[in-house]
Image (cartoon, rainbow over all chains, first blue to last red; front, side):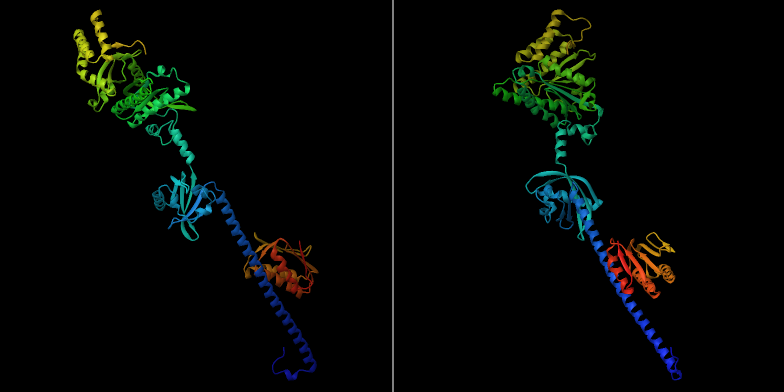
Length: 470
Length: 113
């Protein structure tokens, strides 16, 4: 560079050299300027290229992520629906939700109110409240109704989600109609009452050996005339007949708070965990049902049926027996065995309904029923004496009235009998029978009394009837 | 001479006069300082020819392209005209951006594999 103030002192050659240097420097500067421009250009272009590429990649990633999410939601084998929190309007539904809810495509349910698909819309309100309280709703059973009227049960769960920047509810459900149907079917084999009695929520909780031990009332009932009636029936007629009978009398057990532990052919074994009265009332109701049935049968020129019922109260174990692969409800104890025998005695005495002293004593109000002393017996294979009573509430009106009229005399005769005052007993029984010749029990006692008079009794006489056959 | 990091690597192999840049360069301007130093040293050694292997260079930000441009300019300044840049077809941006090196050094040879 030239120094100031020395210009005039430079020679021509020096000036030429200086000029050449300056030209070179200008060239270099121009090159630098070009380079800088190129550099800027290249950097900018590169930035654009990379930015474009990254943007494309990001968009593709979002699209891919959306595609995968949609694929998962669409392939999920449960119905998924998103509803707006404020309006309960459906804003999204996967493919499976559509047909489930309306019998049409998922697009058609978008825009509709979710509440419309609840059989009971109040149930949805309750679920939303629960969601608000607990933050989540898991596995609630509700009934849905489709536009075509078809109702079905679902197992529904709910969560809060944000969808299109709005607070929404995501609900997912499974159709459990088949499960409900199965449960209903299963409950016909093991009734709900029996499950609750065993303190079980579900049939799946039932295990072999589950049982409850307590004082309960047990009832055995049997169709005494079954063999006679069924003799001339085809197998199908037999089934129809038994089911017609059981269909009429079984509900009486449930109605009175009992449950049927098992059917024994035409017989029924039922348990009443509550008071003894329920067992006695159920027996009366069953016999009344049989009476109605008989009236129909007689009208159709068919043989009437005869039902025998035995009821006893005592300690018993009620539970599940069998083997792991096949089990059923059962009840056992001496008192249960005895009840079966007591029921069998209805045939011997020619009456319908016998209860034991244990049941009579356990009655809350025995004056509600028409109960008269029947006999003191010792059944085969048992040592204890059993005092039995006849319940004649369900005798036909005329028979019941006659028994009621002679009730006191009859029981007085029995008192004389056990006091070995046989003649007095005989006289009274003859009076009873004069009024009511169809009183089979009175006839049986009269025969016994007469035998005692004719043959005499020894000093060990107790008057107890010994049953020599089961 | 080399800088080896998890996400990017710069190496000079004097046996075949090859500068290898690989990985993703997402550094800030000043962070390229050590890389620039290596590249300047290579350029100042006045090799007869030079190969830049960028086949494994996945990503290069603006400061990165700036650094490589400055290196090419230095090569030109040092009159090293036999320069070959090898890129990869796999990374779309390379085709566009590396071609611009020719503007700085017209004799530069570009190859993509």
